[in-house]
Image 1 (cartoon, rainbow, N blue to C red):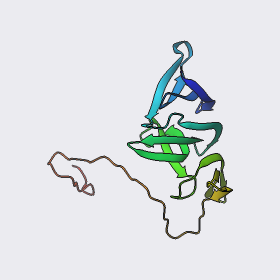
Image 2 (image 1 turned 90 degrees about the horizontal axis):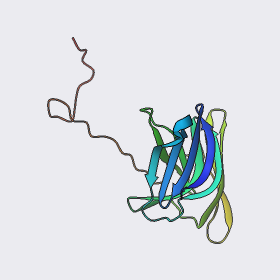
Image 3 (image 1 turned 180 degrees about the vertical axis):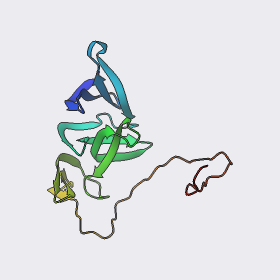
Image 4 (image 1 turned 135 degrees about the vertical axis):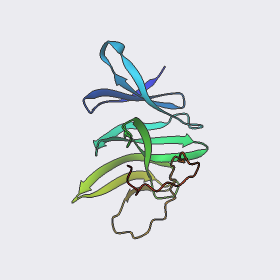
Length: 169
């Protein structure tokens, strides 16, 4: 049976997030239709993909701690759920516990926006001590690895480039 981890209001709808085996599933309550699946992410190895039920809702996203392995890469840290740019419900991996350094376990997090700057505080165990990391706005460069995925756009003329600056007649 699916294990319910959180139940919250999102943009006027009742949303549940839980997991069944290695799948994290978001469902939207549709009255007589019950809860209908609206988004899912599958972990390829972690047995319990949601770490705890502590959540925070800010910037139109619902944040929670997760340990989800996607395509063989473990993503342990703060995950979020909300709408994508296209308006579709989606999960996203937001922040690691301590930059690119592996942590033993995550405990809690807090997201705060101060004077227009977003800060994330994450409590974790580094194997010896309990620590708290904080994102910073002063770093000119970042050492954490990131992955950027995009769609490959092939245009009618068969090329991967299109001059969109020309006005259509």
